[in-house]
Image (cartoon, rainbow, N blue to C red):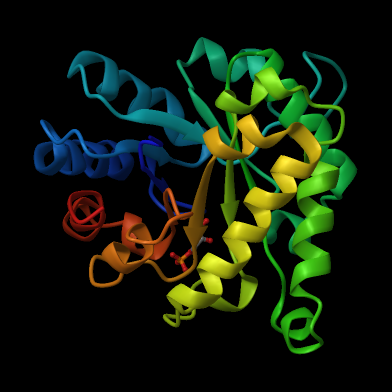
Length: 252
Ligand code: 13P
């Protein structure tokens, strides 16, 4: 039985003060619920304050970063290392979000190095994959998604799969208000699961949690969750308000 995960990707929103108000507002509405694991992913500069708030109020909420570099220390201007994140009690890290691939030139190879480094440090990577509208219209969804999953998981071992989450986020559904249909999401996510099976074995495919992302809201989450293969959601816009994010957690 795979426990659903609802992760909020705040993207480049919220000051540290606003982030604390948001996480506390979320906790007020979700404390006591047990059906899903809840994770918030604030911008780097918010992490110390949000982490402190999670700790002092004993919130059962995972804390995710939105990116990290794979090296420990050194001359890598602008980057943040896994051990720096661990010091702030970070539990999860989004890796290879389509916005990082599109706007910051992240490659499949870089994603793979980050995934491995996160696992080595005991941080759960939420590895994102997904095709663009152009790729979907050209009939390339299967090839793109399979290749991103294979490259991202390259040289991982089967025993490492309980510490990785994959998020399928079709780029055309992100921030558009138009989510993928449940059929499209289920098709892509079952392909992700099959690919995990090809790379890491059938047990891994059974265990790994795969999320859907792209215009998820309280009104559509239950349809996604009710499918065989969707194990939760990576939520952007709707994670920025306690009511809508908690609504997604409760309906999951
Ligand atoms: P939206 O929920 O705003 O479509 O964003 C999805 C996303 O990119 C989460 O990582």
